[in-house]
Image 1: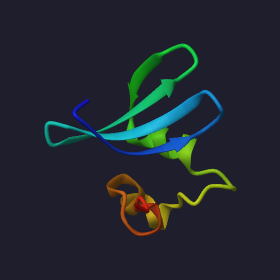
Image 2: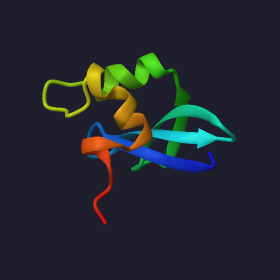
Image 3: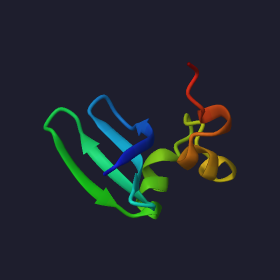
Length: 75
């Protein structure tokens, strides 16, 4: 994984990362407590990220994946 673009905290210990791997968009689920990670499909990432309480919605998916709009980091 070259560059983490964005992430979504699913639970206290589970995160979904969007990353750029040499020009290829990849999704990774990470267990921060155990230090485990696994690449997952975009569909699986959507299932984990699009919850009733999440700002991640189908209409905002591309913004989430590219860290634009409401997902842009405020520095």
